[in-house]
Image 1: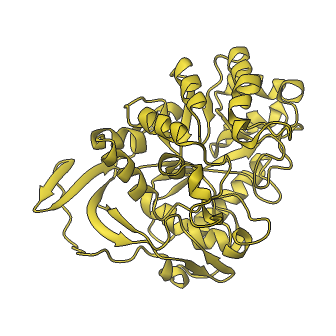
Image 2: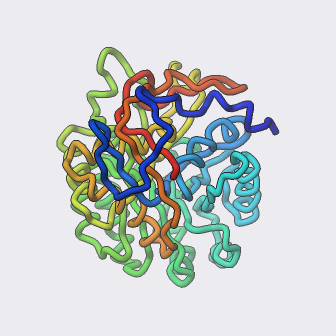
Length: 380
């Protein structure tokens, strides 16, 4: 394993007007033209860390900004058993920078063959915190996902209710006859709504919501059992961002970006103060050559910039007072976990996002590469 020092190039650059003095005072202060926002250390409730060199390359970004993260299980092969989840967690912990207190929370990859007994083992492990359902073929490394949730997964779901194990869903159907931009809406109508009705006590997180339809559905459900994660890209970008100035592969993700009306609906929902929404970056690193090719991978690498972008969204909405609940309270409260006790500061200070991050196997292009952002996170 390469030493952490090999990845020093991944550190956030010094901002314009950098100052090492950080206010420990109230949540929101002004010092001349500079504003600082102190918040409880956030968590990321939807994160892809990959494995191998890529894991070592990206984990420091998440470890720097987040206390915990729900780690997605869609590796090759997928993390389908508790034993694999334990091994994956050990690999992540070995790759974390020395002194970091970052805690990866593991998940199982649901398949047609997952057994109720595996759910029992997962709960007893103290390592697995949720089960992820990918409809087969919906996104990256989802070929082993569920083909018929009602025909093949009911015993597992019943056991998850007993074990109080949350189900995390990638909310899209994969029927080729359904328009790409309608796949989330159809999933809600044909799978998620019936699932919630059949298992009203099952905790369900609809991951990376993208539509007004999802907002309306989430808010029609029991606040104690149904929630949603929201990504920076679905708060800031619409589908025009895929084509502005030519095809933009680094803005391609799944679920795909939607119309502006849907983006606005998600922003309104997230900044309303509702506790049904919480931070989940869906940061999904792919080597640059795998994005910029004839059949590019879906996924946006947002880990280095996510907190800056969430702050931007809440500031634009005049809702900075609601940012902390979204980033730091709603997620652990839904999962029944304690909130973090450490704190961090978001400083209003311009900094430029690197155009690329280099690691031994290639390059990564982050979200908003080369652009200037206005909020910069610091640990207290």
